[in-house]
Image (cartoon, rainbow, N blue to C red; front, side, top):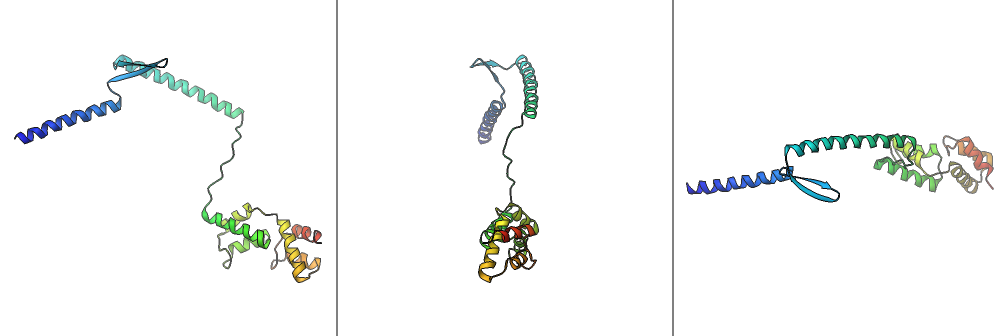
Length: 188
C-alpha cells in the first residue's frame, strides 16, 4: 500500500509540474507590456485582458489600413522585378542541351532540329520537350544555314542554286527560304 501511495504522490507532483509548464507556455499568470523600451510586468486581470483585446483590434485595423495604402502605391508604381524562371523538368533541360549541341556542331535548322530531337533514331524526346528546346536554344538560324551551305560548297562542290535547294529540301537542311537565301547570298 505504501508503494501505491508513493507513486501516487509522484504522479500528482508530476501533474502539477506539467500544468505549470503548460500555463507558462500558454501565457497565463503574468502579462508583460512594453513602455518606451522598458518591460513592465503586471498580474493578469480581466481589465488588462479587455485592454489587450481592444488594443489588438485597433492594431489589426491599423495594420490593415497601411496594407491597403501599400497596395495602392504598388498599383501606381510598377515594381520592376525579374520574372521568376519557371521550373523546367529534367527531360526539357536534356532536350535543350541536346538541341544546343546539334545547333553548335551540326548547324541544323529549326525543323531539322525538331525532327532530330523527336526521332526514334535521335533524341526520342516528346514533342513538347522538343518544342521547348527549339524555343529556348541559343541559335542564329541564318548563321546555321550559312555554315551548312559552306559545308555543301566545300565538301560536295555544289552550285549556289543546288545549295539553296539542298538547304530548303525536306530531305536536306529543312531551312526556311529566307534562311537559305541569306546563306547563298553570303557564301564566298
